[in-house]
Image (cartoon, rainbow, N blue to C red; front, top):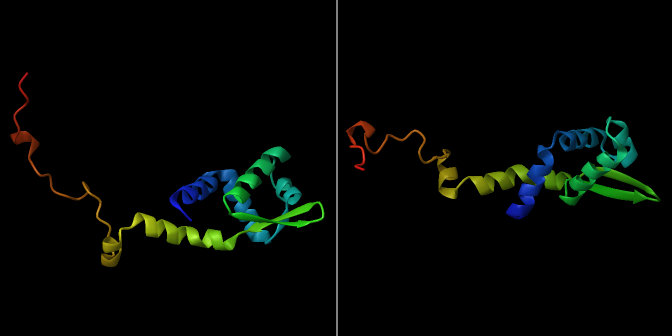
Length: 121
């Protein structure tokens, strides 16, 4: 998964409704789109929109049985997210040391602001 796809997955999960849909589907194993809609006080088109986004980014999969659509969590995609974040956000040298250095945090100032003269106009 490239960075753009990872960002889209994270954006999809950042929405509270979509996050709850993921939780409900994961708990049930598989639900019809109508069953998902019954769990919310939202209009069915709104629920369908959220489900569509989760399918589009690969977090949900759809199994068709006649006219019914059954959604389930794509566990492979979901399981890959923490590892991908770690790979992208921790530099290899820093990861091997077990610490992450953030420039500007915890470092002593390089000069004392009190010693500096104000710029002349």
